[in-house]
Image (tube, rainbow, N blue to C red):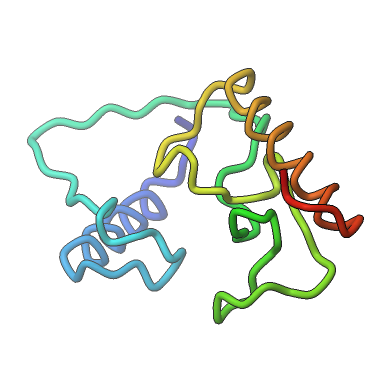
Amino acid sequence: IKCDPATLRATFDRYQELAARGEDEDFGKPARFLHPIDGPKYAALRLHPCVTVSFGGLETDISARVLDNEGRPIPGLYAAGEVADTGMFGTEYPTCGTSIGGALFYGRIAGRMASGQSML
């Protein structure tokens, strides 16, 4: 995989430490997704990933209003589509085509709310 063995070992050891502690202080990965890597054999693949979608995003309410860190709406700020974390799909991200419906639905709500109209 063309990776420095010492760096790979250090990364592995650090992940195991964080998984055992149940807290990812390096990247903020939720504890429910931290699983120790156990087993006698491992496999590695060299991948060339690319980003085609985002996961998560700005926290919004059902009115498409963007919320601050305390969960309060930020006046005049709305979000929809992949930039908005609507929570519609829990911890899974649907295929790109599936997300179009949510983008259209919340986009319409965001537009109506921003223009002072009723939500629906």
